[in-house]
Amino acid sequence: MDLILLGTACAASGQERDNTYLLLREASGSTLIDIGGNPLGKLKKLNLSTHDVKRVLFTHFHTDHIYGLPSLLWGMWIDKRTEPFDIYCEATEKQWLESWLSLMRTGEWPVAFEIRIHAFDWQTASTVWEEGDVSLSVFPSLHGVPTVGIRAVCGEKVLVYSADTTPNPLIRGMGPIDVLVHEATTAEQGLRTHSTLSEIADYYDWSGVGQGILVHLSDGEPYEAVMAQLPVSVSSKLTLGQDMAVISID
Ligand SMILES: [Zn+2]
Ligand SMILES: [Zn+2]
Image (tube, rainbow, N blue to C red; front, side, top):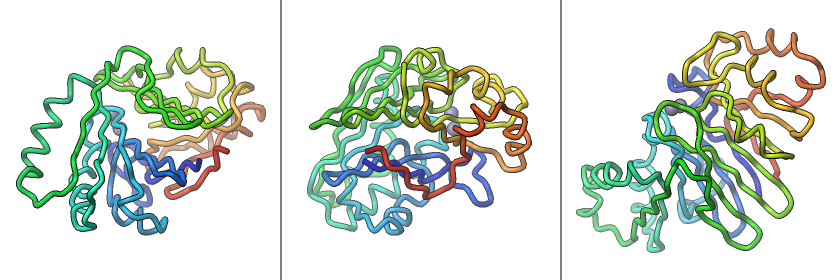
């Protein structure tokens, strides 16, 4: 499985960064985690078709994490999709999502594919999808609105995405993680419902993490300066995420 950073910016997207969203690419089909800007263009850059995208899991319903959905669905219709498209979202937002789809008039398109909504309880860690040796689980984040982080297991490898959150004890207690994608909305200036680079560098035991990738980044933040102050044992694990970076999870 490959992890692709389709976007790495905070809510106010950057000059060179799209809003944070991810793609888990597998030969049998791909999974989007949230949908930010220009999903159709990004799929083309990866030589993927909309047919390759089987599902999306929304971490939460802040605009920067969902606004690409109409464009993706429209592209699927243009591509004459017939197979179902699965949307995983937390239960209290299901009705809102249905209203949004209705506002887009998906029911009036000559849509030949079914949009299936699968709701989960965001407050309970649970596996929402699995196939073969790949599984996707959710766990509660700490973000002020119902939000989940993602734990993807691919064979022996573990990928965790924090989603928008303050440092999360559930991630700290997870044991070895091969790839931890964590938000760092600022370098060191504290925010009530987000993380800073300094906080997460301190909070997690990086000896148990293979590599840490920072996303949800803000323009103009002194990330490099803060990184330079960290112990090498921590800074050597961390990289600033770049849009369209591909990370192998196998
Ligand atoms: Zn966000
Ligand atoms: Zn958010």
